[in-house]
Length: 79
Image 1 (spheres, one colour):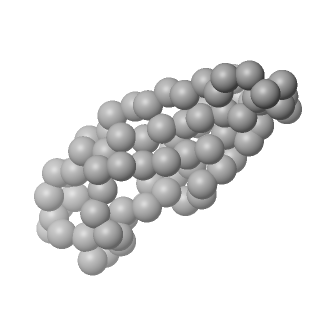
Image 2 (cartoon, rainbow, N blue to C red):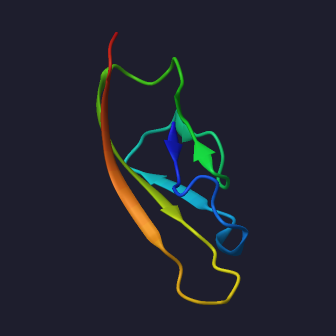
């Protein structure tokens, strides 16, 4: 799983919003918001190596600029 830190996220910076790019149909995030998110891979996804970009963005209650971090995640699905 991917977890936003600090854990738990201070209430003034919640919720944490998650997005993912670089996947194909059948690769999905377990949730769009929350402290932790998992990447799920359906059985129908073809065997291959996949390069994902997973981004977490907080939502400051003060109206200030959001904090965003992106991590590259590569995995191989075997047949």
